[in-house]
Amino acid sequence: MYQREDLIARDLTGSGKTFAFGLPVVEYLRKNKLFKTGCVQAIMIAPTRELALQITAEINKMKHSVEEFKIVTVYGGVSVMDQANQLKRGVDLFVGTTGRVLDHIERGNISFRGLKTIVLDEADVMLKLGFKEDIEKILLKARAECDHDIQMALFSATVPGWVRDIAREFMKPNFRVVDLAQDLSNKTARNVRHLAIECPWHNRLDALGKILSCYAGQGKVIVFTSTKADANSLLLSNMITHDVEVMHGDIA
Image: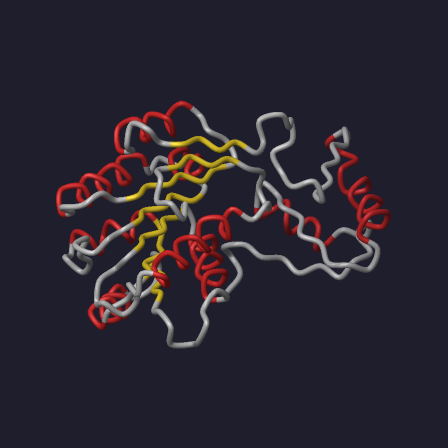
């Protein structure tokens, strides 16, 4: 990354991929005194708001001082104008979700004239969620506006065919592939334990109560359910000894 090669990098979820692209990008810009030039230097695109905010939080930890560089995070569900005003004041790093990044590009809020690097984080998830066309529009726009080489990096837990298709179309022919998970059957970090428990449907609440008692102790737990009714059934069950709060679309 620091040598500005195009890159596909694969490693397990939770292994620190954000740091792997964030640190070399920041160090390169720092060394070459490219902060506070008024131009966006790097764009980092994520499939979800939560991941975009996580990237921003990690990169903010790399600052030598609070004012060293400006980073803006853009995503849907909040005011476009607030984000646009930040962009007009000048930012160095631009992090966002696919749709909102494209929205700002189409509104003319962002220029690629100083852009050095584009990173797609969790590229496999992004393309699986149907953002392939949006990604292609963003990359085509960057290519059309830039009169210099842009470094492109794809970071991913898996590298399916459509990720490689994007790479072949938009990356330099000599792009590198770094796969740190090629010999592993797991798709998550080593400190994450997965258990699968077979249970008849009508026994699931009883089984869940026992599982929570055994594995969760007095700790905090998130239980995902398929429906709002299933979530409510946990709240009402006398088999769950933990205090339960329900979160779903019918609750303010």
